[in-house]
Length: 159
Image 1: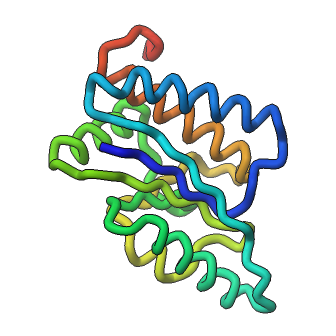
Image 2 (image 1 turned 60 degrees about the horizontal axis):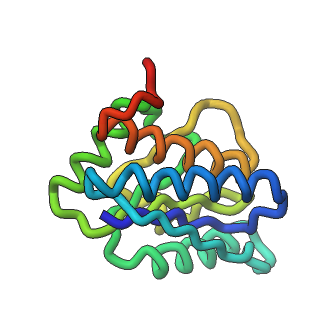
Image 3 (image 1 turned 135 degrees about the vertical axis):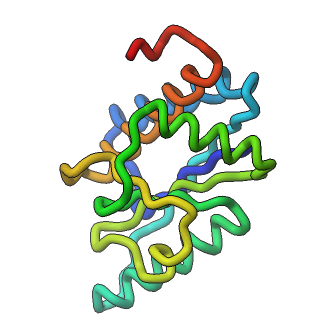
């Protein structure tokens, strides 16, 4: 199952970009034996619309268009918090159901538009804290790698 991270906004910090790239490479290598990967990442510029509602609608339309027919997992502060094991199990179940691709959607500074929030198979929370988008992307990339290690029995995850 292909995995995509579709994000509004660009990583501007080189250190964050390097960490995401490191976990992306690790995920691709580790996930292959359990049918996960490759991981691709697409960034979209923030909307320049004048109102919050218009910005959210514009960004939502672009994210949904890019996701196509992928199973959607939306990162949302009000989403469901999962343990690493439950997250891995969710990915395993999607792959076992012959899902061809899964897209993780990260919204812009104003959050997700209603079209995105109505569409996901899962709304996922990375925790109750508000994270900058770059850090949220680092955490997501690491958790994808961790999920692959859990599913393949790799010793990285020691919980």
